[in-house]
Length: 169
Image (cartoon, rainbow, N blue to C red; front, top):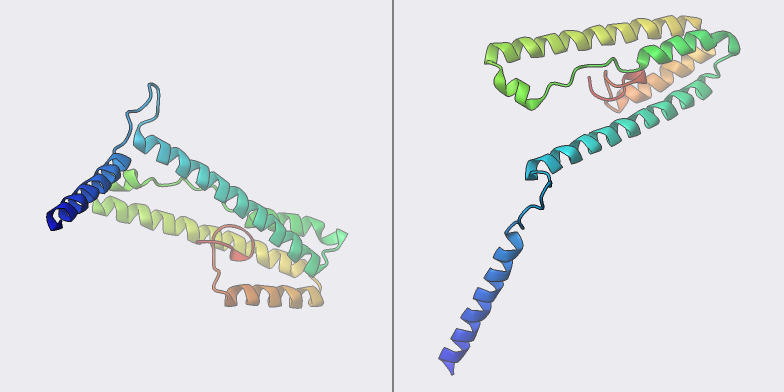
């Protein structure tokens, strides 16, 4: 009796292992199907595009909210539009992981130094645009701008994608 139970347990264990192995074995690719890595790259590109779109929508809502808080007047529209345009992130070439992997260490250091300089120049440009808009605001608007920007900075946001230093820098 004991040997029968042992055999049944062993057979059940083998069956479970066989089913698990079969589930992990990839099925043969259909003619014209993408190689395994290509599908993941396409998904990453779609996800990145979707995230960029959501970030732009969120940024637009934040800018509209700030515009309402500041109560921008028709006379200030030009300064506001110039500032809002300056707050949009500059187009940056995306460095691919493979590109960095092909570089030597000194080349990677130089590339990172160049990216850091570009980010600093973008932050300076945004800072100058903010000072220009700020000078066009009335004292109550300036106070509101100060409060909003301090709350934003207190949450730990700094430099990068969009108005008031949203995102990464």
